[in-house]
Image (cartoon, rainbow, N blue to C red):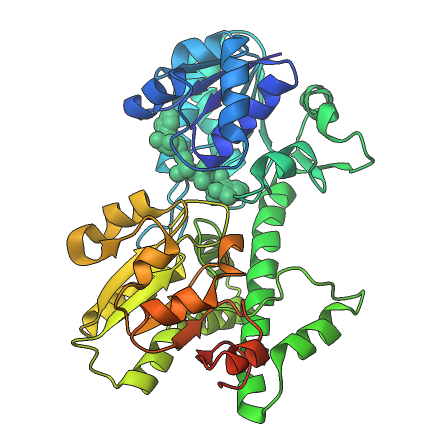
Length: 435
Ligand SMILES: NC(=O)c1ccc[n+]([C@@H]2O[C@H](COP(=O)([O-])OP(=O)(O)OC[C@H]3O[C@@H](n4cnc5c(N)ncnc54)[C@H](O)[C@@H]3O)[C@@H](O)[C@H]2O)c1
């Protein structure tokens, strides 16, 4: 099939590349000319494991092309996927301006039957509005469908090609049949294709992200209670997650959720509830807990060194909102670093993939280091903010030698408190007694 993809971010580029990899001819479009130029040269402008290899292969075999104009890409395709960003606007709602602009361009370009798929995360009812926009320009020989995306950055290709399920929000049998065929390559192990109405599909995406955010805030509250009552979160977590009704995913305590999806999607669902006179108190609480959790580590640092951190230098390992991505959108590290800077500390950071993004955010207000050990030199303490695998088994002797004093504030519970004690570290983690 000939497919157009509008938006070449984490979702669009993975979607386009995986469809090309299964034999389709895909044109990816973006308004960002520099991005399209580098993609034409096989350079992926962000870090996603395995993606660069697939892009190069499909470029070489001419199944994947990159353009800056929507019109020609849509005109030669039967299906267009909109995968542009839907960031939070100042009121907490999803900003749909890029979606509507893309829809208008699609409407102007289609000739013959066309399926327009909304893959961006959009509030309930957006497909109806997009249908109106396309109809203004394109008559009625088209279908608008909602096919929300559930991939996770860091394992996006695996998630896209082996999804737990594919959701097709379709109003027509013709579009359902074509999209079912297109996705059949990815559901060969009995993972289901669920066909439903568009509004249900749109809402399912928000319900999933909100549920996962709830779980994170829940385990963080339980962790905080563990500290208060002298319990150990790793025991409680295991006891909890071995219950098959509950399961183990998204139940790790930490310094709060971030990223480009959970914060904005929780906000947008609260906002949708409000539009329909529904006060989403559960989600408001999840958000409030998350907000507070992001300041936990800073409170600990100030509890140890005093509120005024002038003259203190702190090393930070991990900046991305989670491992295996360079994405720092809404990362807790941003809140932590801004608070530490405001308290007067000097900051030395290392992240395996996010240093370029961090530099764009913080400029010369902090210093950047190519290895985790370089970041430690002369620091008063180490803070761990992202659970990259390479931080799990460090050389503790090198940490001790580089730090002025052996103090670690671990926001991701990477180390065994008993080992830390044996190595004479002062060690703070989440939901466990400090040692
Ligand atoms: N990132 C994720 O893990 C993830 C997972 C599931 C769903 N989503 C949802 O998918 C959508 C896209 O997310 P993302 O992280 O890929 O976004 P992103 O910000 O990484 O990429 C969006 C891209 O769209 C381009 N763009 C914007 N307007 C355009 C236009 N009019 N024409 C062409 N290109 C345009 C931008 O230049 C950018 O390259 C969002 O709605 C998001 O909520 C994201």
